[in-house]
Structure formats: structure tokens, C-alpha cells
Length: 90
Image: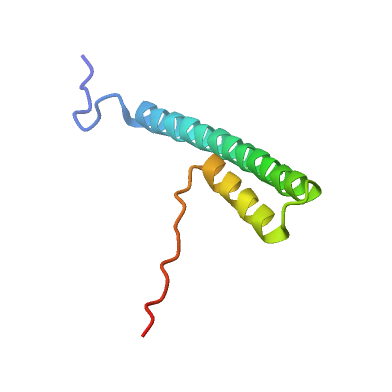
């Protein structure tokens, strides 16, 4: 009978292949997710630009139209709006 090497459990190369497989799948998932996030950001930018363009074409003052476009961007991107606090006078 052949003696079985007690230092291996049969998972040596297979374990490495499994780790490589999982790592490859993880990389693919991350790349797809990043691509989708980029496409979403581009769509949000286009929508915000349309808000700015349409607001200005409708006679909305530039500062207000810019604020509207920024609010649209923040809302679509899921960002919380932070209002600056006024400096105390005195």
C-alpha cells in the first residue's frame, strides 16, 4: 500500500484555484458595479444640465437656476444637502 502524505489534505492546488476563481469573480463584479455607477453619474449630470438649461431658458435667474441644478444633482446622487450656517454677528 502507498503511504499517504499527511501534510496535504488534497486541497493544495484546488484551494488555490478556488481562491483565484473567487478573486476573479469579485473583480468582475466590482468592475460591473463601477461601470454602472459611472453610467448613473453621467445620467444624473445630464439631467442636472437639462434642469439648468431649461430653467435659464424660462427666464430663471442664473444663480437660482444653478442652485436648482445643484439640488437636482444632490437629490439624484442621494447626497444630503448641507446649508451653511451664518457667521455670528458681533
